[in-house]
Amino acid sequence: MFSLFSLLQYHLWFGKNGLQDNREYRKAVDLATASNTELTTRNQMMFSEIDNLKTGTEAIEERARNELGLIKEGETFFRIVPKGGELDE
Image 1 (cartoon, one colour):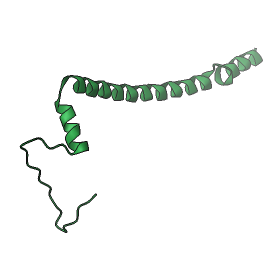
Image 2 (tube, rainbow, N blue to C red; image 1 turned 180 degrees about the vertical axis):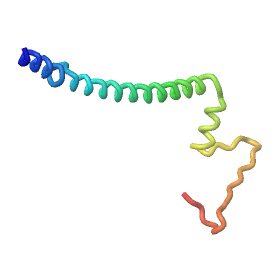
Image 3 (tube, rainbow, N blue to C red; image 1 turned 90 degrees about the vertical axis):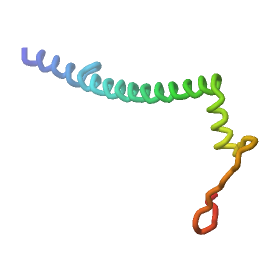
């Protein structure tokens, strides 16, 4: 009787699909869930930016100003020079 109980306990704790395997699978699921949450957030931000680029001109104008140095006609561009007189590039 005791040997049967010991054998069942061994399978429960250390056997295939036992508690150790269960604990490892739960860790893997938690990591995958965290990764999926991060990727879902990133995708939502990308879809929002794509929608903004399709419908609005403000995002396009902002990117052109920041990345390409766009200055509209009739605007005056001011560059603030640091106290030392050298520009940080």
